Image (tube, rainbow, N blue to C red; front, side, top):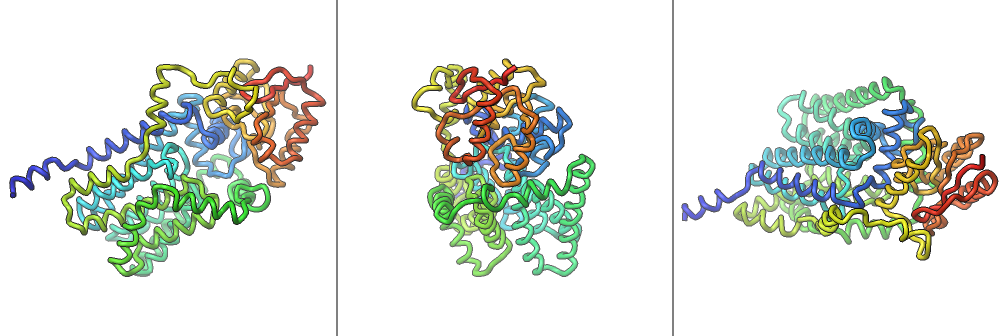
Length: 484
């Protein structure tokens, strides 16, 4: 019997084997997806980052999006090193995500031993790759925010001295610097700190404050306007036309899809078992509660928002499974079978590496008029780059950030994608007044009519009718050139 147990233990995977395997699977998913091109969000950040690093146009003078300048810097660095590409930000994001997996392992190991650590890293490392959590997009701000929050919680739970509470607060502030939703994790830690001494709470708060001062100093040295950070990153994200402008029915539908029509339901029995066993609200439950509250308060219900909820759920799940005293080998087999992500899309895209482009220009500009995907947007952008001069400006009306970024041409206004608050509209009209671009692309697909306000569409229509001529149709965009 002892020999049999020894053989089982020899076959148990090590931490290093698991983290290498998880990283390789994540790279396979992240790099072999959506047309080998930047997504719409990635394209916005790359465009702003490129204008910053290449043209000296700091956020938000070189383009507006409601995200942190830190993510623009990541994509600006990517452009500086490798030009327009999608792979470097996803590679960097995957490495950061693996750091998060490592600290999940350390947290669980600190609480309940190595077996719990291996279970936790498997639960988290697999779930973060789910389609339901937009596992393809490791380059998104959530990756960096969640990584720093995981590190922050590790230093908090393993703290034996006040300086570790300070470090915990500092990392939490850096996470919030990437994404404001990090404040919900900070609140959870702040409340949990009341179970410690008053000095520990003070050290944590000083750490948060120091992190905020550190980030603020960097932004100040970079020449970024703090008023614009507030306005574009927070203030103009509420009300009509903003990213949070959704009715109750839409929110209820998205809530159902996110929490009941995705793989996250696999965690629910484990989370309920954890609460039942402990019969108290500890730091893990607080973390999960505030992350859940943050998703609902923000109210966008994007799949990627789930990434903030997965670390506490994974830790709770690992602690429950570890208590069952099932041999580690069998527990890991069940977890890897049940929690593994679907990889159909990357497998299909892998075959396309050998067949070339799968979006052809002849498939567009006739019925049915569909919105081009990432691959087609990349090809259209490359066509624009080949058919315009570097100093010429190009306006892509509506949702065209991918086309804009691959064209490597500057938009005539800081709003280069669809943002329809009153502040955005006024600035858009002002930027285009007396600053007409050499080329304007107007979408033909129905989403342009459906989601872009009529006054914006009418303004573009009057502009092209007055000063432009129709050159051609490309990938379901009418291409207009200015009359000489």
